[in-house]
Length: 120
Image (cartoon, rainbow, N blue to C red; front, side, top):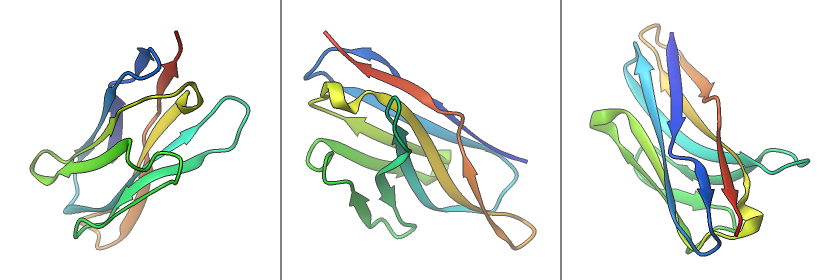
């Protein structure tokens, strides 16, 4: 089985920064496309950022120039650096990954989520 475990969430003041981490564990051959999503209170889950296997990235307009997605393939870990945080960034943040299993299939996984609260 494969697990994605997020960490790094918490309470931060407006204008502050946080770095989220998502570590993959279990048995697999590689991690392909990875992404961060968030679900604000009372709203639907939305895309924040994605990174393809070859490194190309895509961001939601609301986080461009403030958030940066990165990955460390040796550690099977994905990061989300969040700067200049705003109250509207408050949400549960989820990690997502396409994992290439030994079976030869690519399976999509979600982490359990980590709460980010931006408030003074």
